Length: 577
Image (cartoon, rainbow, N blue to C red; front, side, top):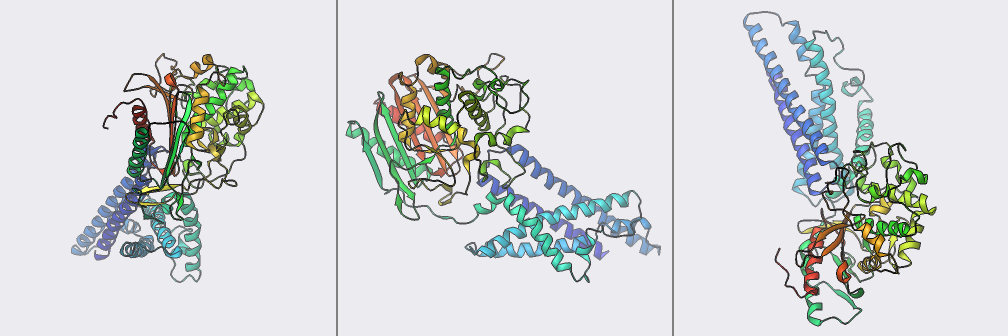
């Protein structure tokens, strides 16, 4: 009886410990703002696992209690132990013992880390993570064994062999290779899992106190005469914005009446090295790359090279079923049904944190090649970065040139965007910001990623000044005719006649100014370690671009700041938000 009660208590302890592991993983996902994957699916998976674990352990506890009760009853009546109880006891096989031992070791290492959180030694910190994952795997293993025996016992099968052959070598105490085999399995399981979940593990270490941003250095370039009061107001806005988002650096450029008038950068390119930022420092565009690609598409439409409503397969694009027509218009407006980031069978498991290098746009199409369309093209709206990979492939097929060459020839060179380049791991310009993530008052360098999997939708490096040049060029008749431009500024309707929910046009979102009711074009971008925002007011050719080197779950705060700056330019007191 005592043995079975002990086993039942162990089962409950294991359940509680599993919940701790679950909370640990869920907390890391929450703090890292991994919202770019199917968060519902991920949470459902974890919740299902922990609920299943609770149900199984409650069943095991009841089974153990029933066995103990029958033993007392049998002892009272001086009867032999029933055969069914003998089979039921197999539920508590030797797997309980080694799983419990591993759990104990894991909890001890966990407590050591809690007592001394500054444990930054490579071996100790990775050993801790490996232990946590080993505990997680041991639960999976333990449950599979226990459920197998529980099922067999309930069906009335006599189990001559108490453990499967796969399990037996791990559990035989006298096996001379037992420890070596355990180590091999330990490494075989944990090393791949470390790389699968690498963003979670890396998140925990390397944090430093946030630098003092109130007195951060400032670099300003005034291109046209600007009112001194307006300049000081803009600089104060930059300071408040930088402090509020906790970014080591923030950079801003402004154009008004069709001319670049002001650019400023504040803070540190790398605060660890005390390297200051300047107006030529590059940041990641995130999804602000989409307007860049859209402007290139507009140029091709104006030349008659690209038809927005023609099936992309007529240009020779190879993707999915050519019978399901997809147009460039649908790709530009996120109505083609292409999926966005999700979990994958890759290292790491989140596509958003991909560190795989892609040499060409065609290679990136393989990411979504096997994923079915989410809906019939044109019938719904679903924001996607990968749809712009297919758009880039369409531009290549229509123009018969490499996508990056198209961008250089049709956009960057004509608009003198000399500081804009595709992000390539082998070639990062010297004056590029370091990218950071923030947690409370602590900050650290962001995890390494390779953005070559999404050049067209989120993989460029640039400066606010170059983004302003893009906006001015888009509004310039000599660069793009008005008829074509207006086509790109109409929020797209779905096949049922309704507007899409984001008022998304072709590469831009469209909204109405809260101050004067004028039309505003805008697009925000979030990337690993960076956020950006581009705002265009066509009426007076005002363009504002803001970029920063800190990771946030939204660039909306930059959008609010850009609108406040427009209000300052108009002489309107910014409304409190």
